[in-house]
Length: 170
Length: 326
Image (cartoon, rainbow over all chains, first blue to last red):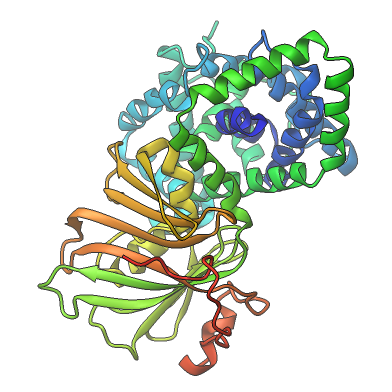
């Protein structure tokens, strides 16, 4: 039963860890540690509350523990992490509403990217190239490719904000 | 975009590239930084094929770790029996209710998907059936897989030339392919698929058993046929609009061990522009450990066809090893 509950949350949990962990090699380890820790603490979980924030709290602790072990910062600072948590709470949406549905808006926002930004996303995310390799393929400088990626992320961020999918600005 | 925003973007970009870290002293807008980091994570989730595979593997690893802790399970049942705190009781009731709300088919599929990563190393005979206009209409090859998404496929080119095979797979870290010219290429899944795999299978997106199992619950309407020989056959019909996905999927497993005996993907209408593929079938023919490094390309680079063939296992009539009749 625990497995069914967890499978409903894996997407959102991994998205959260991905957003706050700067050491990408750690994402898998922390994801696993979080699930195992949640299983061990499941008796303490208040069923009247949503499970997403509870899991993310465990993930934060796991990441902090890993950060202390590595003796360097591998997690975004607390203020940024709190904002990431706010965004994830918005993405959680109403009970039972899947992350997939909530992020359908992402696809719409992607369609509105300029050609260069879409190419940058395609090369660096879809085809999983590093920025320098993507720059070679697109015949632009490394800096230009990074700028395109930045513009793409900024554009998506603002688009999702407007649609209420991410935390609103001031 | 303000100067501050540009600075934030540069900082986030550097963070994502692993070049520096964010500290509390940074005079940047934390809300924007958080938003950009979430966008980055959503892009990985939505666009990067490797990320989904990594998640599935991590989840399987976590569940394996949990199952390896029987002592705690036993201890908890004692606590429940003796004390039964209210929260635990609520959880138990809610869990049972949730379980009943799930159809028998999906419950069974959940069991299969949760155990498929423990099936161990297996070899399947592959049969690619194409439209009658294709010559040859049938291509045969092998599909070696272990429990964690690593696999090796060996297939002839669409021309059917048995001496002109392509070998490709996914190892510990990435996809690779040895082209008919004997050249090794590594790269992201999409590069490999676009350049070679579709060409090999006649433009059909070649599916992975483990990945299909992972998607069964979400994308297919599933029914179960109980077989008299101790097996269960799952009939799945695609309900989601997924370009290139098989329109039907059939999976036969051993009821007791949950091991996959056979699989068959069907495309109706056939998929592919040139030599359209009607179906791809895999029948379990061998179950034994592969040599070290089998899922890495080096094991397949210089070996001849004879060297690549694994020793044949002694005949085994157990249901787990018998290909499903059809």
